[in-house]
Length: 470
Image (cartoon, rainbow, N blue to C red; front, side, top):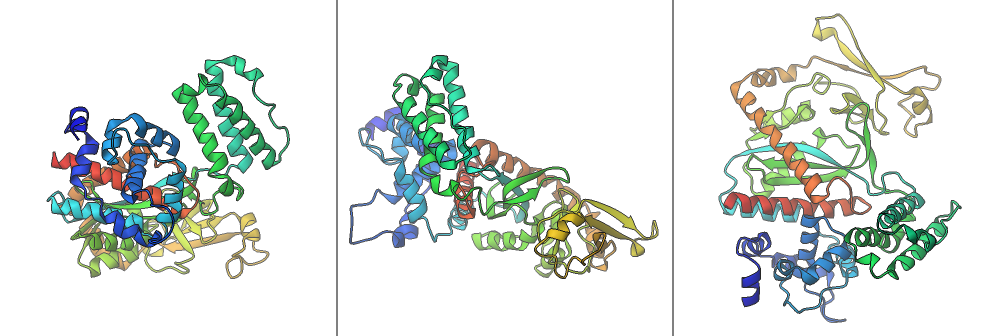
């Protein structure tokens, strides 16, 4: 400790986190996933958990994270290691994620821990939450397994050529077949050649590209053989742009502490997650009186739910979302970013038209038209598409009596003042993506995305608590 006191300053972030949080809760959560009377002694679960925490803060691969823990004294201090102590093998992190964290709702657990801490430190004082969704692209983003390996090996070669163009002569001949196994074999030979160049692999940019390719070949081989990410789905950011991946639906206090989150596939509707986010926030310890969101959250069911629970919903009405009674509500959902309805097969309407007498809302409807060629081939066409029909549309009425009180509330000073707070969650989404690598999934599958979300949100909440305490 004397050495650490000299080297790691008292205002170091990791030292402050160590002093702030009692990580002993990790033992209680993972004990059922360990064998207590057989095998070798396990690496301390708290240390393994802290490694994942550091990975989220610094957005590093497992190999580079462990490598840094060899020489970074603040890392060693945080991990509760003696300065001369040996580090773990990077493969241990993969096993910890897959075997020791299974069957644990880590996302809710870590959020609740930080909210509890924020309330204890008197940081959360308000009773409002801000809600929004942020998207993360799937790791393989609709690329074939072979394309993923080709892309990563290409980036590695390009980085090496910037240092030593003569390496072209030493590299193996690129495969010309479309066989996945041939590409794997080529990548393995490429890795072997590069690892023999002791000077070359000392360059940080080469080492990072090399480690990423090795991790893809070794750790992700099983997932790659499944082609693309099987859980990821296509979602829409606007009428003209889409993404392939996941959505994380977030609730946040006005002090910018995330109070609840839920991870879904990319096509899910934002508004449908509101009740879950409110209930999770209350369970975490929040006293929710006001909910702030965009137009996606102003659908009829959400207005009724907040009214029943004596909450105010600060979300601007959108006639296309809040049209009141309509047929097949569960089969067609509104995408507020694109301004179009999406059917249960995930197909978005290609155009819309307003019908009825202009200026008379009671007689007007918005009609959304779908691509008829897709409808003909759709697996859900029974009961939805009529054989031989030349078009497929879905109509919604604009007027709804349910929203009369909400329209009045929308004109109030309280509504207008609270609406100004919504920008805060946009900034939080940006922090998650650009500082914690949340724009792209680091592994395949919904469970992997939930783990990534749990660690990223835990990291941003802890950092925010430290800042507000200071």
